[in-house]
Image (cartoon, rainbow, N blue to C red; front, top):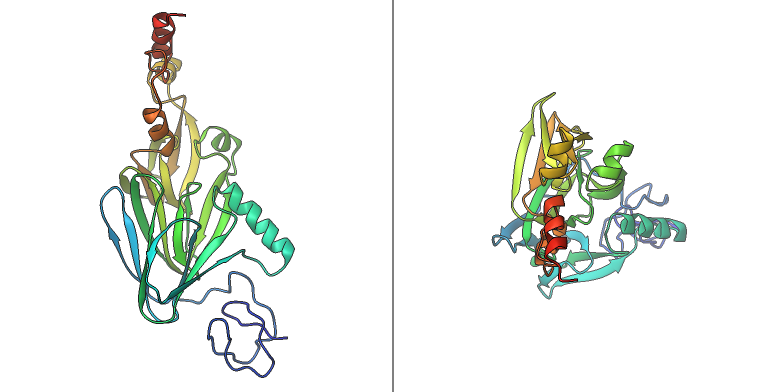
Length: 291
């Protein structure tokens, strides 16, 4: 039985259009496609605006037939003419299970929610904590690596996959662990991360050192490594940790001013009267304890 080359839905042999997505069925439709479907050279332009300051909403204006997918629970609103459906990527049960495992490793939900417009409409997405939304317009084959759980939404031509940190030190001490998310075009993709964002365009061989965990995203061409933060005294008493992430160009890098872990730590009730982030603060907390 033939398959739709756009959405992967099974169709009747005599059908000229897919009943699921309306795609025109041409010659060669008998072979089942990959999921997500094979990329076109150029994705259809997506109209959008990012509204707000530190509690931003990405407002996507979809034309008839346009479809995007998003992390479950990130939708804020949609117009009534936009249908939505929860799916697990993959053709076989094994593909679906493996895709779900990879999404959990990336800090994402088991399912993705797909939004499709039957006529011009709008859908809005937002993150789960204060921060900013970053949009990328990716060319075919262009990739960015982003921190775990940063993915917000994307056009269906964009592939979301898992990326493993190749070096042991980077995985153990990089603040992001061994797992990053890899987003590959073509198409427009939206990510969310805490605080404000700063973008750097690194020339070949140019490096920047970043506090571990503060990396939002970087282009695939950027080299990612972990280095010791100077002397023992600086590492122990500097308040910045023992390791720094070193990013070397060429390519673009985006860093954030506030991580979710820092936000949790600052909002947590003070314990013992000392700042437990530093050895001296922890010692002060012990000395001031009444126990």
